[in-house]
Length: 174
Image (tube, rainbow, N blue to C red):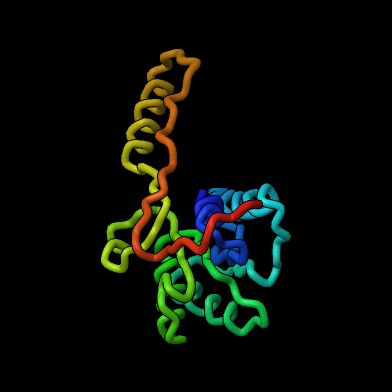
């Protein structure tokens, strides 16, 4: 969804800043978001540039360092999809250190819609985590009480929350 949003805003040179895929909790989130990034680029007939994929352990500081690495490349991205809002904030910090303006020089989108990202106007993907947690708890209680149910509650759809960190470059026609 994040990559498609950037494509729809005219970006075709999109970098991905995320975690390495291993997780102590064995959650596949990192791998799934990266796969979604690649799938959206393939569907738009855009060749994946391996140099634009930057992975490190999770965190603000790692994302800041990875963003600096992106700007050592001969070809530069016009947008960054950060796997989380915390990582997006690290990306934006690095861009500011390089005197680049978000979104005038480069667009950035995050994921999670954390309150801490509001002051910087981060465009992000909202997951409706509280509602998802309630659904999961209700389903778990049904299972514990051995209530037979064939349907798992449908999670609310992900939602792009457009703010000030992305801009339209022109419609992508891929």
